[in-house]
Length: 181
Image (cartoon, rainbow, N blue to C red; front, side, top):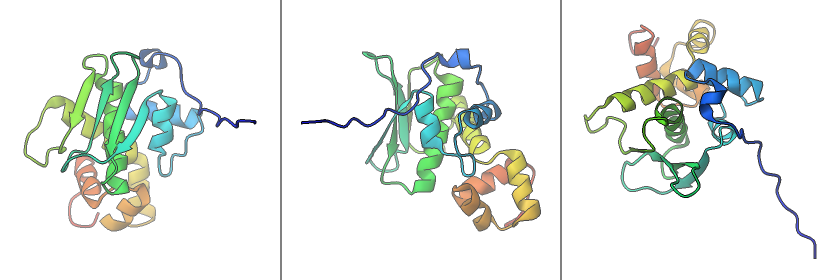
């Protein structure tokens, strides 16, 4: 009897700090060098390339996801709420990548329950949300879409595969105002 084994995806086997990635722009350049689709960004493939194990599981209530370092194996494991809309899952993945890039040298467990919907804030969560927005909606691409394609929030959200709320927050970060941009 013959067995067929699936080829394991390419995974970077070096330490994150050796990659020299500390910003969304640097992560996008890394993605491009490794032939990851950028429009829209394939966050799942990017996560795999970085050596992070991703799991999609139903989580309680509004819990969005988590990122933790397995104490036995040393591997990073990201869990994403499979019950959430695919665009929200994409933002969660990008948010957890923000934690991985910016904070994993300081903390080895992040649990993102509500992304500020309960009114609570902390610096790590603010930074991870900003990282996610910049990763999924890079400034040049965002401005180019508005100038050359559409100013409608719904069109921008569809193009970047994010929620309308994420578009509004990103637009505000970039100095845009109004219901449509």
